[in-house]
Length: 201
Image (cartoon, rainbow, N blue to C red; front, side, top):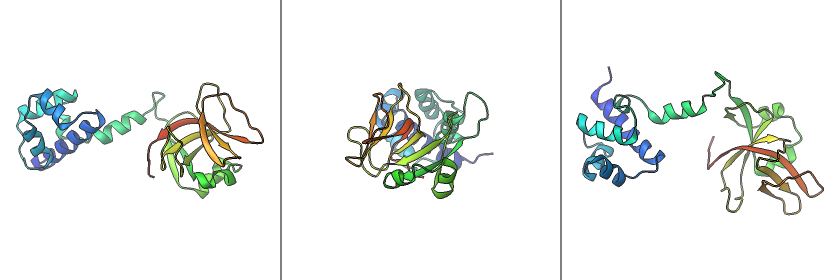
């Protein structure tokens, strides 16, 4: 049996998560759900221990989620799991070694299995193999910030995927959709399968 305090905590954290993940605001929620801003403010501030059932129903209806679940489960955890579950069944995630941008070129020739013993790991849910993570230490203007993590299929260069490429002349990484091959100047790191913005392991 979940206690009332626990239910209120679930409700509070779920509302915060749903507002953020759905691109809403406290104002848009209160307007659309027919609630006062003070009501939303008080719930999120933990000032209400016993939220009226009609209020909970208005909030859950607005977000299109289960009235029962909004007080009893962690939506953020549930959605992360659901987004990562493969339609192919219970696939094990691939362990991906994460290299800092500054160490990438010196260790690029090593096998992924060896890199996995040398570097921290993250996980990728999908069917690809030969994956590395590249932690950006310099922004790629207009595309990625410092701290972003790129999951790359090493040594792969598909025509329809963005590719991470190292320019030996400028000593910088860039991303291109154009067909690209190894040359004296350019080193194609591989196809980018996933970007995680300002992701921290």
